[in-house]
Length: 327
Image 1 (cartoon, rainbow, N blue to C red):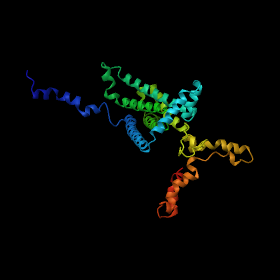
Image 2: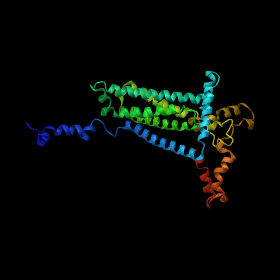
Image 3: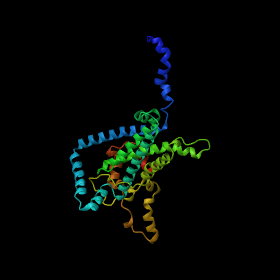
Image 4: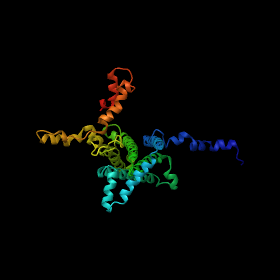
């Protein structure tokens, strides 16, 4: 019997429709799945990071400091490579990253991101066990959300590894990794933690079993605890003009310590033990609070002879100390 268009329409139209229709595909996979949010955060972070790298390279080429940066990096590398003994090399490498505590947090972040990526791969492979074709089983529509999560974890792992390079600019990679990890943590909080506090809802991803709670624990550690409690590396406001020999505790305190003022506890306890605390025991002044930095930033907004706008002094002071008002 010859195959005619009418026969194809009568016999195969329903099959073709169920195979290629968007509605049939939507039954297995929905673009409204919140597990795609970390992938969107990854794409946004990657685009912003690419823009920042391009701008940074362009600015360095304009200022003709590429050779200076290369020599500094080479000097740091030579210091690490030619130090006497492995212990001294490790100490030198830790100093480049801001100290052994900061380096320990970086190692913990890298290990946590690697574990998240491996657990995500285990979940993907577990979903594909019942399929004859392993490739189709891994990349089926039901696995796409978990593949998106694995991509986000791989990106965070890559950025965590980049943070070990002996350059100040690698701190930007840490910020982007924290952003992606906190986004993934927020998604799991909404899907699987918040329902536990209600009477009508249930966690969405309980089918993963115990792996789910291991992932949430790792995301809590890498996406919340590490960014909150990791000390910050001291970065001078102007490295070429009098960088502080001993940085102020405020400039190296963790985010949690900065918001709760825990970095002032040693000073408070010392003042409690003595009848009078000498001014020499006070911590050093922050770089950005020095008079030369304050005048450089404030005079163009306050002094009419430096180009300040003709307006009431109150509004100029608010503009100068805008961020201090919000602290």
